[in-house]
Amino acid sequence: MAASYNQVIKDIRAGKIAPVYFLVGPEKYFHDRIIEQLVSAVFPDQGSKDLNLTILYGTENDAGQLLTAALDYPMLGDRKLVIAREFQRMPVSDEESFLKYFKNPPASTCLVLSAAEDKKNKLFRTIRESALTVECKPVYESQIGGWIQSLCKEQGYSIEGAAVHLLADHLGTNLLAIEQELAKIFNYKIDDRSILAEDVEQITGISRQFNVFALQEALSKKDLKRSLLIGSHLMRSGQSITMLISILFAFYRKLLLAAFYRQKGFTPAQIREQMHISEFQYRGIAAGLSKTNFGQIKSVIGYLQDADIQAKTSSVAETSLLQMLCFKICRL
Image (tube, rainbow, N blue to C red; front, side, top):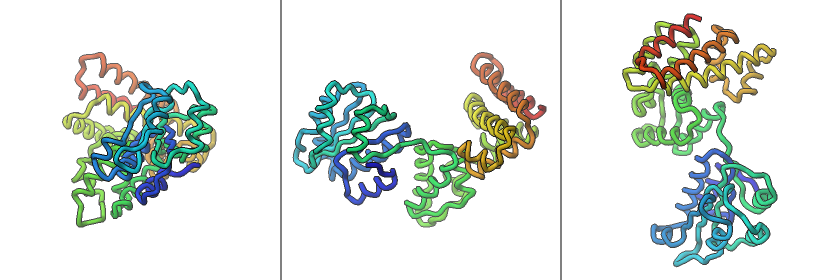
């Protein structure tokens, strides 16, 4: 049986604990948060947790050890919580015996199988059918805004669009980083439940004027003066040029893909759908496309690759490398 992440979290908080959870997918954030909620819900105190929480790893343990732990009775408590991390890598020598567990799992154990990938074999298919399965897929960039808003709403806050975009632009799809930055804001704004862009800047230190995304925007518009100004500020603040290059590289790869789709006759809406980006995110892409053609974008990617090699192998100052990169891109 399948369930969404939000529904599972809601049920756990309401005390509805399933006998078996199958968490499958590469987004580690969802695995960790569900497991954290289960630990809090199952164990009323540290003593019962110490006695009845078992964590096994697919790289260190096998299915026989997992079954033994799951079939043991809880000690001085009502329920055991047995977690198998990296389950996709756990050796299962006797599948038939292992799968018998799922036909009638004991009520005294909550078993969590956490797998970063679905092996799509008989074992995994049977577990999917028997367990409460949660797909832990990465969140697309186009979904991040909604994710931020839902986290705020869950804590009783509203957040304006400009603040959402500032967090999304700076943190991307790093769900843990988003949660941590929002936690700072929640702790600071205890009485005022409305989050503005100014709050994000003041509390988290994220700047709208002088961050890598402002540099990205200036370069895409071929605004040399502003690019040099932002680049100089970033270097003085201790930013790593290799980190800046990696973010710019990701942007220009998206720009190249959008240019390819445009050459194929795709509409802006079709391009957004193909690239899984929001209308707001597409505005930055569209601005870049208005100033740069397909061939020029390929040249920029080459400049970025060259700059990355120089940053890692030459003795040229990072500030000089970034300035040269800005000149090359803006003079195309």
